[in-house]
Image (tube, rainbow, N blue to C red; front, side):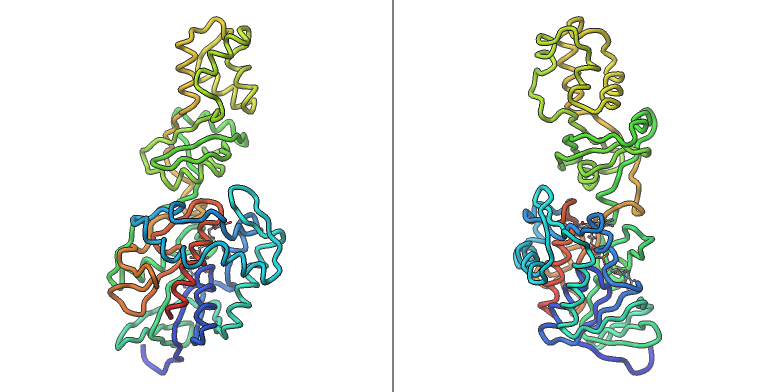
Length: 394
Ligand SMILES: Cc1cc2nc3c(=O)[nH]c(=O)nc-3n(C[C@H](O)[C@H](O)[C@H](O)COP(=O)(O)OP(=O)(O)OC[C@H]3O[C@@H](n4cnc5c(N)ncnc54)[C@H](O)[C@@H]3O)c2cc1C
């Protein structure tokens, strides 16, 4: 890469949640920052997040709400920049917000307010924003990173990769962070779609007829267990409980659903005593959406009145209803995944500054790193916290 370069203290690639946060933190500390993005507008995922209202943090966010090959890695950054810190920033801009459920904070108005706030924060730090330019080449020599960006060349002693993960590629999401990491000899934990609907096939295709039916369940996969709504779709299973469980699910494994999480053990036998002329179908219909009750009753294949069924048969139906197992044949993939699990391996990064241990000056932040939050504002909180941790070290 020949020719003179425009020089900065740091170049940040990716003007998303983490990149804007890092840029503003560093810029406001007097650093000369270039923030570049190949998209034509910053923060596109913020704009579509939370149904346009951006679930910008979660009051309960802590290290236990994140998946990573090293579950302790996120601890430091999350402790130094908390949900209360981000909320303080939001309130300082007069952005009205509300808690929806489970500690999830949303804008009352629009996600645009969050993007405008972050841009204003960047402006206060005199951050130079360059849109519509991806880096076509990166050189590293004599402690300087040199990048071909559009038609020009830029250089800095620090380079921050804040280009996110490949979920929703049609929005310009890429696996660029992984390419850069590999190129500099860092490991990448296999990226896969997370917070993603699961697909059903084979014998379970029948459940797709329930498309549109939703109910509150407890969904479990691996070590994940979530009580929220599940939704049947024309391809399989979705809804918050399933999206959460999908992050813990691996191909070939089962997802277990408790369709009646409030029922105590022995409830069906008690129903039999209380309402002997009821059927399984009508009993389930009291607690579950009609079409779901019908399908489950069919599958349980227990016909006749409850009085005609043995206590043993009812007890085993109860066990099935409390742990109905599905064996998804896949997910709806990166096209529909809210986040990517896996990413740049944390053992190669400093917990404090997100700098690569073997490449001084190279930082990775946000979703590109192998830290993935639950559904509900946790992923933005990681983007803010990792952005600030890095921005304070630039
Ligand atoms: C539909 C949807 C809804 C979501 N809702 C929520 C929510 O409500 N709450 C929550 O916490 N999380 C939510 N998320 C997840 C959240 O959006 C991400 O975890 C978060 O945006 C990650 O921040 P980031 O800065 O790491 O990456 P991003 O915000 O994705 O930013 C990455 C930036 O890098 C740019 N880029 C990519 N490749 C290159 C390249 N090669 N060169 C230059 N620039 C590049 C992109 O254009 C983008 O601007 C949602 C995600 C989706 C898809």
